[in-house]
Amino acid sequence: MLSELSAVIITRNAAATLARTLDSLEALGEVVVYDNGSTDETLEIARRYANVSLHQGEFFGFGPTKRHAVSLARNDWVLSLDADEAPTIRWLESLAGWLPTAGPDQVVEVLRENWLLGEAGTPLWLGQ
Image (tube, rainbow, N blue to C red; front, top):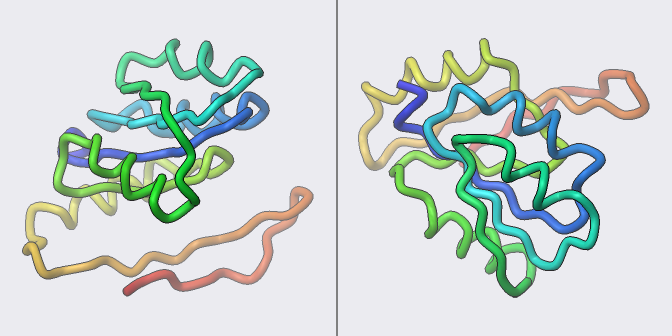
């Protein structure tokens, strides 16, 4: 069911971390990368991935830009990530296993583990 999940990433000069993130998303059917003015290798990196849909445009502020990028996704279910976040395949498969049973009024709550300077921080629960 990973083909029914889109990931959306907004970028600007994210070459240092983007490849790791896109590597982690290769099983997804679609990854939307919305770039707003990169001057490094970000665009070249994004073009290397067959499942990436690359778009370029203005930066409208973080919320409005992310919403615009989400509107470019083909799938109803969207995973919003930053260019330095890389979910594990196990986590993605768990999420995909939930999708067939999810209704339009459901949300998912996930455990997010933050790392800083190579060390895990306190996990945070994300949900709505």
